[in-house]
Structures are given as structure tokens and as C-alpha cells.
Picture 1 (tube, each protein chain N blue to C red):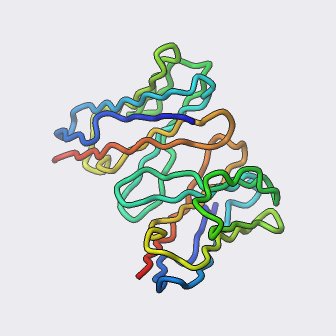
Picture 2 (cartoon, helix red, strand yellow):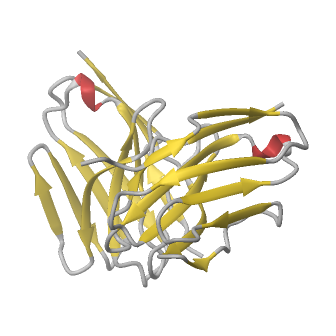
Length: 112
Length: 111
């Protein structure tokens, strides 16, 4: 079946612009996670949803980062007033059990 | 929070050799121990995992072993093939659902 999809795959933003990154999880997966992966590093946790409820947002690096999942399916990660340090790959993962997490291909964000 | 270390950071083997990557963690509450494979330009792919009540799990050429007392688990790949070349991450969970990833091991399999 279809895996996790993310769009756009690549995004270039000028410093100060707002961006919105979309994640379509595997159908029926109640848990959804966002991770940030810097070049040459492992993914780092940003936030976690169970259905539409955001249960953990402890990994969001600043109040410029905001995530939502209003209907318990598609999720959007929004970054306001982007900075150069926000340049990274943003990964979305979904899970049926909260253990096995299945990742999308990621969105590579470059802030110039 | 969970501290995760992977060794080695890079590993070069000849095709057909075995490869072993070790992961140590700090949180004794961790109870789920997955390994992910990430190829260039792709998201991490879950390749094998183990729960804390099991010491070893095998799936064809890959296996994972867990030593909960010593807080480490290892990925074993036998009969390596060039297509095994990728970055491998361990990612023990830290209490409930959040995965804490190691820094990764780049495996290069030469034909």
C-alpha cells in the first residue's frame, strides 16, 4: 500500500519567509511524528500527535515552529520567519502502534 | 533524556563479509530497539526491531541482539552486498513513543 508522503520534497525560502510542510501518513495510522535531520546527523524529534491531539511538542526548537493535525490525518509543520539554522530535512513518520514508525522521504528546506 | 551512541561511525567491508554495529543507550526504561537504514535522499527505513523481552531476533541476513543489563544492542549483517551500503541508525525509544536516534554508521560494501 501507499507509504508516508511528504510535500514539497524541496523548498527554498528566503530568510524571514514562512513555510508550510505537509505530511500524509499511512491510512489508519493514529500516531504521527515530525523529526528534523541536519546534514550528517540522525533525526531529532520535534513533535508527536495521537489522532488530532498533540501529545508532545518538547522538541520544537522555538515558538516559530508550529504543527497541527486538525482531522487526525494530514499534518502540517509550519515555520515562521525562517532562519538559516532552520535549513535541514524535515521527516514525518506514522505508526499504528507507536512503536514501529514508518518514515516519509522528507522535505529538504534550504533557507537563503 | 536518552543518550545514544553508535560505533563505529564508518565501516568498510568487502562483499560477503559480515558487519556489526553497536548501539549503547542510557535510559533503563527503554523497551523498544529498532534499526533503520537510510539511503541518500530517502527517509529512514525500518529494517529490524526487538522488544525488551527478547534477546535476539533474526530476519534472513540481518539480526539484532539485545543486552538490557549492559544497555546495548547490536545490528549484525551477514553476507553483505553492495546494496547494503547506506547509513544505519539505532533509535531506542525513550519511555514511550519518541525515538532517540544515534549519529549513524556509514556502511560501505565494496564489490
